[in-house]
Image 1 (spheres, rainbow, N blue to C red):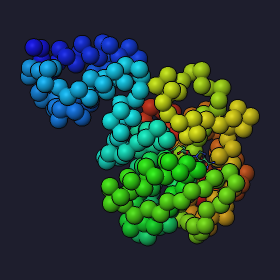
Image 2: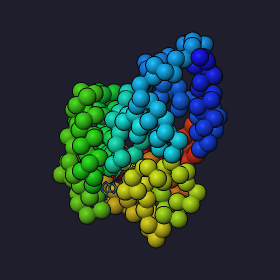
Image 3: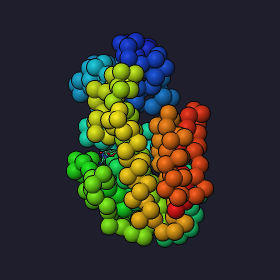
Length: 277
Ligand SMILES: C[S@@+](CC[C@H](N)C(=O)[O-])C[C@H]1O[C@@H](n2cnc3c(N)ncnc32)[C@H](O)[C@@H]1O
């Protein structure tokens, strides 16, 4: 028998798609999921013969590049675990920063909020649970994603009203809003070549990609709709592609939004655009 430390290093060395440290974290995460293992047990003996069969199956899935969150069916976001499925994007750290900003900038009670393109529901559910008694709505074009979002709201005891909506052709009936937020699809198809296989092969294209001809289509439509949906003085928050900060700010300015700002994330990338109607 060897220690967990040795086992983790050995299994991690088989996950060629990850850097060493990330591979070790992912293996630790899998052991924790199946065995209730804790990092403090790193020097304990690991009795591989007692491991459940599914752990080995899941390790095989990891080797194909499948993200650990899809294998476990859940991923962390803003201090809580969210169910994920093949129909939803895995919640990202950058989006936690967007949620944090909205919470920090809007302490008032009873605000009406809409999230467009909700995926797992990580944004509206976190806002519903962290803000001061807000009324929260969320839409997505994907029925399957909405099923996951509803399951998350129920599991986390958050009150969010979900509905199906194609934001490019429909306008949700939720006026008047104080806050409109969206992390829409924003990767032009031509950037596929630069992306990791574990995103491309497993995450839903519907959540990620826009056509090369009109990469800002969602920002334009949502900002336009924001002019009808938001109260005067209401706020629009976008997560953005780091390459399009200036263009998103320009289109918001052209539509008459005020106090338009583009903010960098913890990695120094322009990741959030915000303004006021
Ligand atoms: C980048 S993902 C964001 C998911 C989630 N808000 C998050 O931050 O993890 C974009 C979401 O927009 C949805 N979507 C794509 N096209 C849409 C459309 N035309 N109308 C509404 N939602 C759409 C996708 O299904 C996906 O859930």
